[in-house]
Amino acid sequence: MNIDIPLIWAGVIAFGIFMYVVMDGFDLGIGILFPFFKERDKRDLMMNSVAPIWDGNETWLVLGGAGLFAAFPLAYGVVLSALYLPLILMLLALIFRGVAFEFRFKSKRSRPVWDLSFIFGSLVATFFQGVVLGAYINGFPVENRAFAGGPFDWLAPFPLFCGVALVVGYAMLGCGWLIMKTEGELQDKMFKLMPPLTIALGACIAIVSLWTPLAHEAIASRWFDLPNLLYFSPVPILVLASLAALLRSVRLKKDNQPFLLTLALIFLAYTGLAISLWPNIIPPAISFTAASAPESSQKFALVGVVVMVPIILMYTVYGYFVFRGKMKLGEGYH
Image (tube, rainbow, N blue to C red):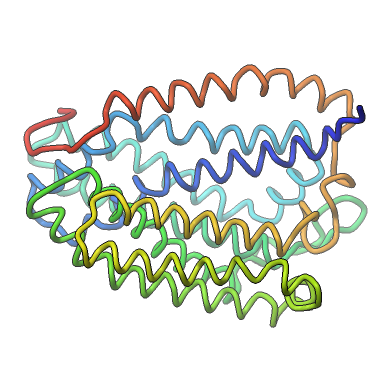
């Protein structure tokens, strides 16, 4: 049996990035939602809902980056060269946010400063993740197996809009998480915030879905040429159905459905991205097979992945299981 090692690695990296978006997305979203709440007890409750798990969520970002370096060094070199500035700003914001997360629990007089730091770190990290995504979709010029563009190519309308869109998406994930994890006044406020966030995210998805094929002929033909139009039409249909179901779940005051349906929307958006770009790992024209490391190197690194990914999944599931249920005022990390 002939095993396609590069394809397996592409799947591992795609899985790692998706897990990061989902699992770090909702706790970044909590920082984005902080300005809607001024009371110290509510902010404490929001942070306590993710305190036991937030730092472990970023393991998936490390897996995605390390996997790209090990399995697709050409893609790693091109993407990092093209997106050095937004990636550095994103990482600095994540570090700053992590420091603020810990310090605000210990501080008294300076707590408002750390609250602002937490908000700022969450917003900046999320925005630049979206910018990186938008720049990646736009693609990179490559000559002689090296990035041939400029350091500010990412500073364009589409990547900047994607940055704003991801802020909305993460805020929605955070809102759904807090609906699921809290009760009373805080949960009621989240139920009120969810409909406008849902409408905003739906608008962002629609704009990106129109902007991308209009700007990229290859993506337009991928989606709209027959028979692809028939094969891929369930994706936008499911997006509309998920948006409608989400609004209905909020109206009926369902605890778990808003978060799960938001996850479904993120998954569908990720699926649409994969359909648009496949099989290119360096858009617009370099496939994952062309960017692969030697197969012997990929096999060697894959041994570690086969061992570590199940371990990461097990401790992640266990952590969420231990800290399941509603979070109440006065409970949690101090």
